[in-house]
Image: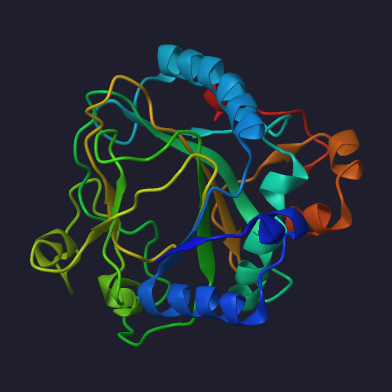
Length: 278
């Protein structure tokens, strides 16, 4: 589902209570919500101009890693990426807090970029099972937040998602299949062929919040320009992702209190880690 925000909502960073309740319900029921064009063009252009040379250097050093002409790249914790409006946007946080509780935390600070010539990914979810022997649906415990830096269209390889409960099939169905792994309890790639899916079209500067268990895949980028998403992951306090963001002490101390709280489990007091150093 896509929500278009009013100018007042964007300015104040606050949704009407019923609208917030609907957004939270959509993530619970369908697995995701889109807030279209939250960030202004100038901020998005600044993010893109800082990102592109970093990404070019990363590909030159490390190459593609999530499929043909497609790469995941960790972001350095520095401007303009670590702006509080990215880390703790009030509209996004209202939804995330409503799903994970107010003591959630960030554990992932990265990006995903399909370049021209990228192909389909296998349908997958982004997490291995917490309890492989259980087949009951667990409440949300980890959410992905994406911010596209260009308009997402049919031509440039939109994210394709399987809404309506793929995140609620129980942990037996949750298995990353990008490496060709077949879950013994459910063949996700085969099952997805016969299920309803949606392509997520949106403006640059939108916000997508998605249950990390939701089935999805990248589609081919047939345009002549990269389609970059900034990607953050927010978790309940007890869950960690295995990554740690390196944040210089002076940078951490200069952040607002909420950003500090969100980043409390990361490696504070360490130099910025560049993407090719991971």
